[in-house]
Image (cartoon, rainbow, N blue to C red; front, top):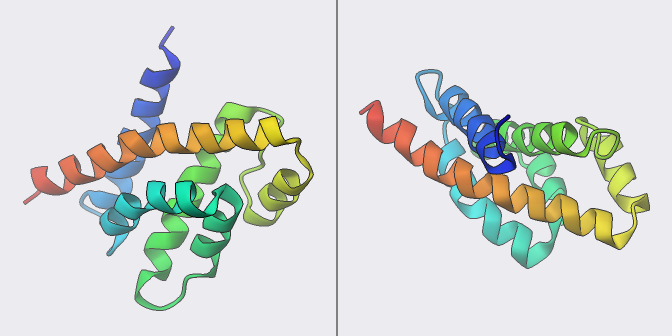
Amino acid sequence: MNTLDQQRAQYAWERARQNSGASRVDGYREMVKGAPALVMGNGLMSTLAYFQSRTGSTERAAHALLQDILGWLASRQGDGVPPSFPAAMQRLFTDKAPDVMRATDETLAMLRWLRQFADAVAEAEK
């Protein structure tokens, strides 16, 4: 049985390989680098809304990262945060504060791995 941190690392590795690898999403790596600061400074729900609302050149990267975060939370929270943006927001609006904090902590923990792996995958393919 893998530890929770190993599970985070494996999920982040798979997501980084998909979005930073050969089928690269432009701007993904940069979006991932700034994500933890957005979560810490603005909160999880605000950050998710920001990624959902992006348009233009960063839209694809923001939506890919949004799906990465929601996918991780859905896998970790079980019956907690759903993988779709509207359902996830509705759930987070009605959750108790400790549950929102747990989702925020899980997001930050996964993003630590994703930041490292997004850089590593991009560098390895140069």
